[in-house]
Length: 133
Image 1 (cartoon, rainbow, N blue to C red):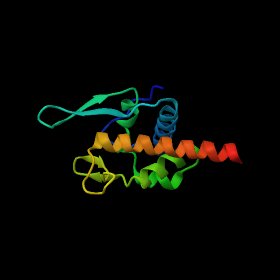
Image 2 (image 1 turned 120 degrees about the vertical axis):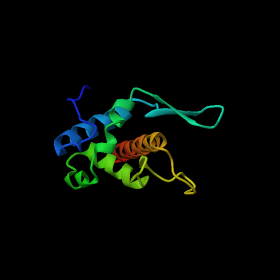
Image 3 (image 1 turned 180 degrees about the vertical axis):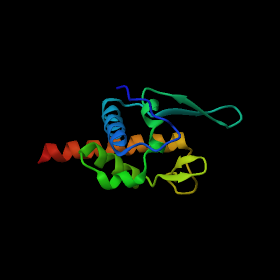
């Protein structure tokens, strides 16, 4: 599941973004863990640890929302639907979204975990729809 070198300071090309999204959604479907393990230390500061999905999710901030217009497979469709449903947005500290009660923002790591959860939910819904069809 190796990707070519990706410069974290530059946006991904459409083709690289499509590859990253496809691999990301496939990896999420094959696992049941979060993108990042998030805990709080004794002072209440967030501690973030990498998981097997983290490398793929490190590329998500480089994926430009304009790529959603070029959705050409079901993996990209699931990714962009999840992206929009959780309300992922660019903030000064990275990609964030509102918490479930909409009283505050999740950190980037927590937002990526929310994206994973929504992708899994959408995949499961599609699988159930296909089973009943």
